[in-house]
Length: 349
Image (cartoon, rainbow, N blue to C red; front, top):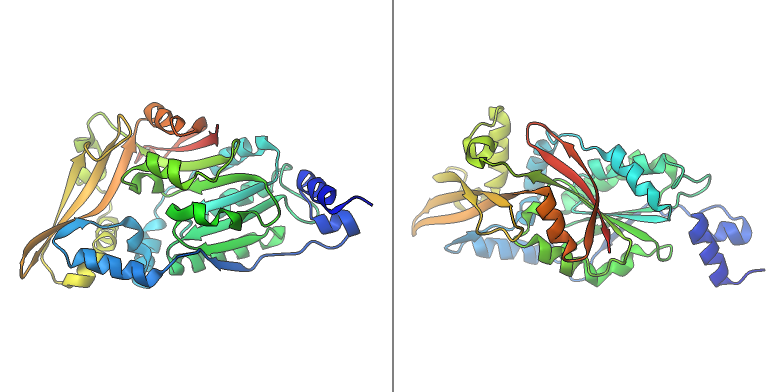
């Protein structure tokens, strides 16, 4: 009879349950797991946002847009218009690792695209299993309303696979403090996903990848999407040019982005919205940011907030920037002709 260590190693290699290897037991279906990251305090986050908004101006943290149910509901309506990603191609590339996998969806939100990716993976021989798939699925998000909806969607959509799914309410910028949450069945290859153009929301995305993903090991994977820059952004970019074809989509987007301001100063407040092109705020060479500046008239005078920022990149220069902090570009796929975008897969070197 092999020892416990040998049993666990065999199970990890085969992608099955240790109990099945040792005793032929049925796999444990750890479907309903809902955790809170250490130090996560949504009430403090709300107070920090209110302190900023009552000040003289500044940049609104994008993660604050989703904290309350109203903001989360507005985001859900906008997310429905997000174009489909080439996730099947990405899944086929990821399957080449041929190892047990932990999919860690950072900023999972409604988890629609992340769950579709996991579904594609589980259909492939590398991760399918008769009793228990060699894949664990984790959803990480700051927003309790979005996370609960995304978690329910994931458990319902993937129920037939018996894949272990865990929801973690927390800030993924503090990921090093709870990396142990992802080793429920022993060490395995990690795949972090950041979809929905999340990478472009950071003031310094290179520093984020260096510091927040420090717990990832050599060979781990990172899948993210981002907008592609244009030679003449002022005339091409729909935000800068004002050429958003659907007026309802434009109104819904601006209402969502201005929600923190209107919650403090009133929905009838006089707010002037100005799209602005910025290159000085970008650390990746060849990139630029499209910012939405909101100036609200108050009793003490005008206050200007950066309500949103979307970054656009040159793929080659973006890849070089990430390689400088240990992430090598493996493959990329173009999508969305209306708003040129790329889905890219990186590997920890």
